[in-house]
Amino acid sequence: MIITMPDIRKRPCCICRHWFRPDPRIGVRQRACRKAECQAARRRQTQASWRKRNPDYFIARRIQERGALSQPPEPQRLPAPLSQLPWDIAQDQFGVQGADFIGVMGALLLQATQDQFRAYRLDSPEVAVTLPSPAKQDQIPLRPD
Ligand SMILES: [Zn+2]
Image 1: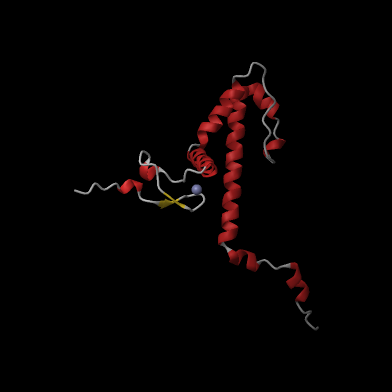
Image 2: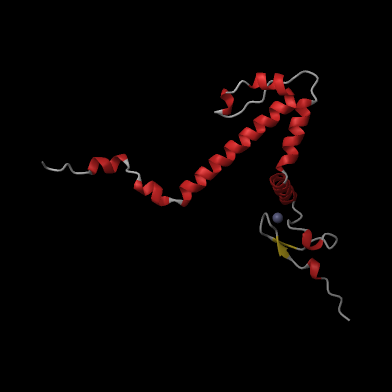
């Protein structure tokens, strides 16, 4: 009788693309070869994808850390136009956590709007085409009167 071990077939490393034989104890879940730099790169990838899937975890942790300080911290720095708001007043009125939450919400909405605007511009080449470029305007011949 032949004992098959499908989990230890060679596979390409997801980082360096070299073929490797996974550790039988890890099996198909092993995506990167044993090289230290590939292991480190794979760990970074896993952490980055986890952060992407759990963005609220880091926001919550940051808000809670700032809220737990014995001295109220400086109001968080936010991108324009949110930077025009008096965040020190918000912090006095709503507390550090309240002001941080509002600030993060504003920044997220701003980011989402900018992302949508960028996607819209990329998806709609006709919009750009209908806009006259300065060079083209110069080339428009004057109508003889
Ligand atoms: Zn590798």
